[in-house]
Image 1 (cartoon, each protein chain N blue to C red):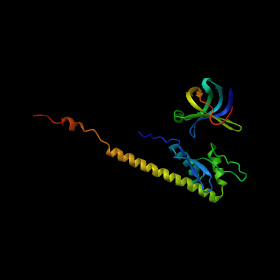
Image 2: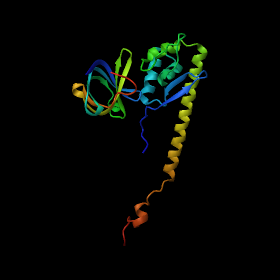
Image 3: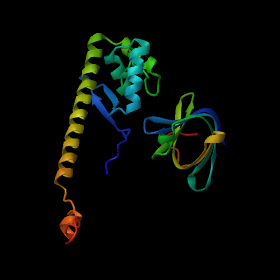
Image 4: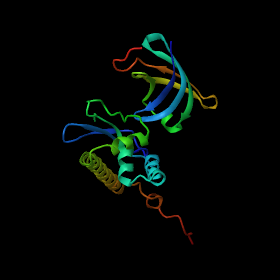
Length: 140
Length: 91
């Protein structure tokens, strides 16, 4: 039976210049809720909330070649790093994560359709009436 | 013995527990014994595998796979058997 819980799987996305993003494959209910709460309480827009929610790590460095650490950092710190990106680079990261989310949702839809198809076509045991004969009614 | 303050029990990228105070001691067979005080935990994630104990230090972190774990939630005490130190880290 397929688990209903989200596994903490990850995926590495590669940007045009070879930089990489490590993202969650999927978000669970709690992460979606927390992203929504960040939007409401911190006036963060939906795009930023989505990126921060998915992003686990990256290979980006500053002008001196020092890694900009976001791994295991609080959401506000990750947001601060995103806020200091060149706008075009931010858009590239945004597109990469949006494309990833779209692809994973499509995979999930396909899995669900396949599971639904298997349930419809699985053999069912015959009803008791078919086996033993109907027992309702009385003989006269 | 290695002692420290900040540590985590991780389930992949999730934090299953936050630790404030721990001690790691060598045990037989290349393993280690962990005793720690848990300040925050996610019961669901603590029940998953694989779990890793992560100890932060000034230049990074040490990571051990958790092989067995006992958590006394009432007293915030965690004891565990850890496997060999991961990666190329040294204590």
